[in-house]
Length: 303
Image 1 (cartoon, helix red, strand yellow):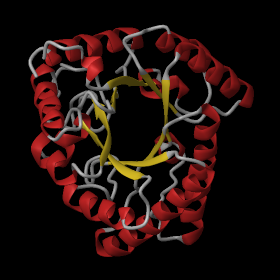
Image 2 (cartoon, one colour):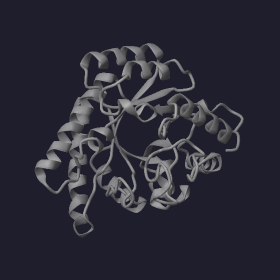
Image 3 (cartoon, one colour):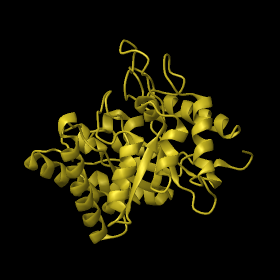
Image 4 (cartoon, one colour):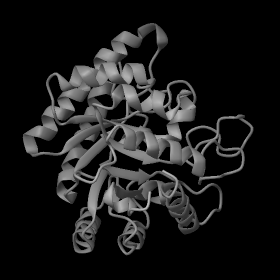
């Protein structure tokens, strides 16, 4: 493509992945958010919980001043605590719901346009029960978000048998799930992530076409699945071209082409498409971000 990438999508960066020492809602949040806000390559920043109310207030002011779109990632509220939104233990499910509702409150406070989360682990023998629990929880989240405004609730599709082992999961089940929620709630949608396609063993077309009517958000990243002995194996989102990894320029080109084919990338209402990249070992986060921008720039010329 010769036209600017920013005409077709709002390019974002997931703050808490690029700077993982902020993932638990603490750490150098203000300094690192400012780095992203100063970089006009990014139209969007995706943040997660910020435990200090004063820091949240400063982050909002900073992002308002920088004219950035904000999205909220609720995933760390579950992944760092072990909580499960489809827990068959009702007390556990309610705890997961409670923390996500707190996240929705924070998302509104920060002026976010969307709130993302993921489904949890499941037992194969009780998969249908877990699916029903997930549907019940999601409807409750959608109702809660809708009662406070127009925040979109977004479920990110993860691996189902490698690391996160989330029930959603394969695209076929993601489609059934989205159909079920959309019957009642129009503020719900799905998120696809290039990083997760090799983990669910699906091509871009296989992962995206069946859910195109429910797709509202996308991530770009990488993973390692060839061997458990390799660094960054699993769902660790290493930089593009990481040794032994799956995704680089060519894979991103295919992904963007499919997103454009289905009309997701468009000039009338450009969607959020964010980098989900994370330093491995002692890598410098800023260099990992520079890698991502170069790869996207190159890939876009080939779409």
